[in-house]
Image 1: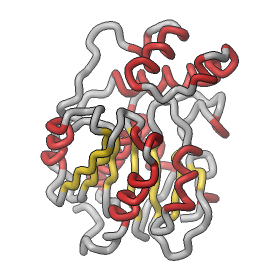
Image 2 (image 1 turned 180 degrees about the vertical axis):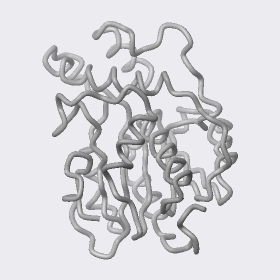
Image 3 (image 1 turned 45 degrees about the vertical axis):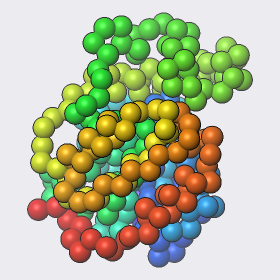
Image 4 (image 1 turned 180 degrees about the horizontal axis):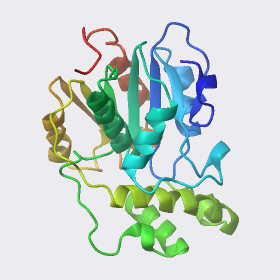
Length: 257
């Protein structure tokens, strides 16, 4: 799909004629640029970074109040299919990719040929912060708590009042979407899932629980590191991503019924 169709939502990597599209959903507070940089090392796909409101070229746009509203707006504005496509998401991005796929299935629209999910437990097993939700904390405390729990915020951002001010809005918005999310029971997806994660991040049983959400194969790959393992050791992660993308066309039926 051409990125010109929806310039607000998509940030495209270098053209890969004939390759399937890989839509990348970033982590909470994250930027699509981090994942578009993978394009050089992932020739098996045309990367399309999904740009959420409140950051980058959409700085100043209000974020959606819920994940349901975000998913609905994305599907209204970004055509998907009939050409093959896959989804990648890290952390919050995994949850977004999963819910977008569920919405496509419910609407009878073409489905991704694979979900590649990273750094997120099975949605029915996630631990909801019942008290003291992060998105309600004061700005500085929010940034410091997120940095302590997950890491991933560069030291130069932590040391700069100006940079902290730039990231705190998207970070708060994303955590509000995450912390107000409620999983709804539904039939498992007819889409294979590849799970990537850091060995020091979520326990294996939280990843294994994703088996309840697919009728197809589930592949789990863990790498040394924590929540942002994919920054610590990018080469093996990109190899695993290429392997996951290699089965385009393996599924004979890509439209939900």
